[in-house]
Amino acid sequence: MKNQNDPAKGYKELLSSDDGHLIDPQTAEKWRENYRIVQKTHHSGNKSVEGLVFKKEHIIKIFSNPDVIGIRIYYGITNEGDKELIIYPVDKLGNDLTAEPLARNDIGIIEKEIAKRWRKNYEYVENNKKSDRVIIKGHFFGKNGILPLVNLSQCFGIMIYYGLNNHGEKELLIYAVESNWKHIELEKPINPLDYSKKCPPYC
Image 1 (tube, one colour):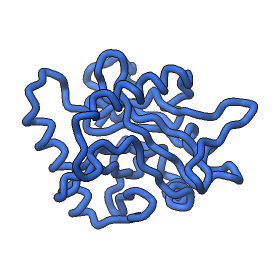
Image 2: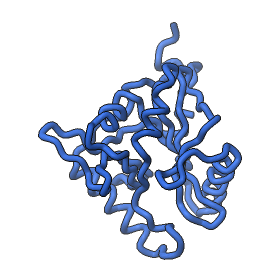
Image 3: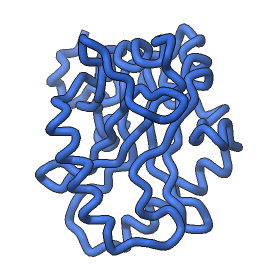
Image 4: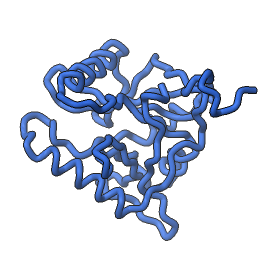
């Protein structure tokens, strides 16, 4: 068995169902505020949207496949210029299962070619920015972090917020929400979830 530090080992093989952990709520709010500050200059379409909701039943269906260890959430932009997030199930080898990509709650399952177009739109926009940063295409979260959220009886779905950490790097923050999109708060904290594995390199 290869050592996990072996450079010959593919990054996606290092993914685990345990990836993604609770993050301090104050840190999460700071990262969301960082994002809001950067987005203040954008007002057309939903370019300044803070987050998107994904229905509980769609997430549970993803994990009904025993081969799925988590989800990879990709950034996308529609042909109209609106921001989207696209979820793919990820198998034990770290591969995306691309048959039924999932969009936000009022859209649901979308066609593979539409998902591919949205992702290409995003990459095109990012490639045209004057920045030396590596383009973050998506984030991986293991099922052991996601399932406890969606299995809550009062959970309607998960809200995925855009964020920027203190280094200006993209983050996604996941909260369990009720039907009115209010964050679910319990005595033992369950929200928010971050510390995902980013693509690249975990692609």
